[in-house]
Image (cartoon, rainbow, N blue to C red; front, side, top):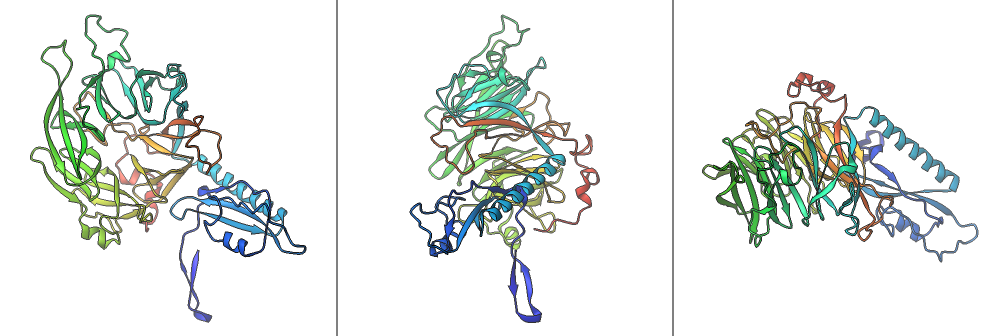
Length: 520
């Protein structure tokens, strides 16, 4: 879309908006009645001014005068950064139907083209998930309540499992066997799951309380020693203190669980160190190692190699837990120099894309929805590229990393971008999409740095999502629809992903490296 500047022979057209991508279009149901050319029509032609989002609802009492102009509306939604509902009007029903047919054909053709060159494909973990709390919670394969988190993990004898947390508890089942899922921990409002492989501990945040449980008590090993004691569910946080989130990881060869609570406007973090007991018949020792706080609201904590990164309203706080010294990145002047307003951006993720380079991911706010971008920085937090900004296609609520792609989650689609070129590589459409696992949450037995090197094979899936799997049409509210179903999937890399062993070699990442530099 362009805007005219000047007139006559010197007329120029400046680019105002980029074209809307076909894969971000969705057509609405056709209205039953046409509309008459009137002031009402003029009002309805304004973007987003229909009676219901994306749908025209003409007055049933409208009577058409003989010989008056009648128009047939066609409504569609544009998702992404320029998302809105638009309505076109055709002079005849045949013209309207032809426009709709061609638009549907274009959308289908684009979808088929994307699937043939996709980076990720969706593989179902569980499709028998419903928001109803009255379903058979103990029926194999049936998961009830809104799914909030998942976690793939393995036991010492080589068995592989998926854990799913929802409003009604924790379910565990085997990969590629959706009917094997069973509820093993009957707790409410589960929001996080983690697994400490070295200690065999499953850590669960349920109803704002952190719990720990011996993995043998939920998935016992066939060769387990009958004399070896098994420990059930135990609270490891104060039940009188609501916990907002926790994070697990290693620093200096030690395993930690760090949880966050609110105190007035501050965020208070408690550090728990997990270690092996002196007596082999006792559970692992979880020891309080102190507290620290930040005078800001926080919503995530990431373990780096020697420090932690705390995502807060003022930016990315890098902290050394040995002396609790900290620094905020990026600097305000770095944001201002790149046209971004400090404090108007909500950090959602920090990805290590190279040994000495990171991608800081931001989302927009309710007042500044257009502010959504990623910023390349070096290990000191200074912009590392020119230009250092990569802009998202939509308002991302979550970001995950699968080298060499950054995966952004929006409510109606998943956006996959190549981290080197910044270019859009794939869009996966859906409804009510949420990220439920981003590759974190499993601390392996080996003493390796916790972070981007956890997966040796780049074809190993490390991202899970949940999306609406019900039959209700787009745009129809289902808040009170207990029959709404969810589909839990993992993003499985296709053959177009990098060849194993070339993850961090810039010349071998993909053909996108030969493209011109990305310009927002």
